[in-house]
Length: 309
Image: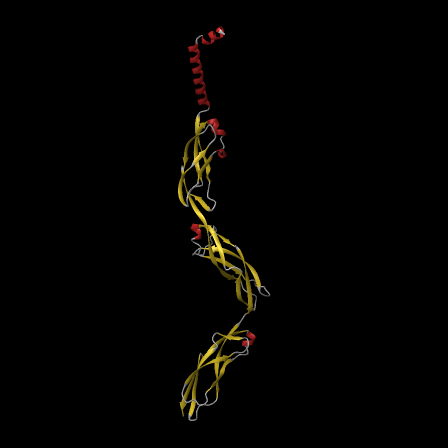
């Protein structure tokens, strides 16, 4: 043992100097052959603990992470190994500038992160009840007209980010009227929300998205304008004459099937008795309508002008 100890301690100072010199030489050689260098990696910024009932947006999707390491280490580093993230835990709705944090493999050093802050906006998801407005498209079958459209739901729910829900003006459903229907039909109607300018809002859901509408048809009506002819019953008092008869309105517009209107040349009023009259008078009377014919106003005013002979 003493001999081994003597060998170890013999020229100890020289041996230490040589060891340090060898280590320094190794460092020099390694730095010369595999020097430290820098490289930038573009990575996405992911979010942790994002609220489930909110839409989260950010002003930039990714950052550049500059790393320093020996050239051989950087050459083997993959972008997938570098993580950039922010933690949204406990944040209230609104806009928040947050520092970007990183996770990198062992042996690498972070030089910089650009940008080092990313602004996040937390927009709560809300819902709102709204009425449905139906818009008819398409033409009914020949000889038919749309008598009515009845949806199975008049109120629906819109769901989406609060900032967008506040801009919803109405929920619209387009009812495509079939041109070859032989009778009343039920059609599916897709609903979509729009803003005041009429643009559809893609980030808003409508619940339910699809409703049904019952489309009823009626025979299409023709229109025709005819004269009104008052029906006078009896005679005025002796010594007087019925000098003139004026009707307001003198002509009315009829609606009905064309084959029925073809037979109508004028409309008569109900009988207006004038027996014993000595003074001019106004009478409001009803029109006598053929079956299948309608008018906007069934009553007319007849002015009877009576003069002394």
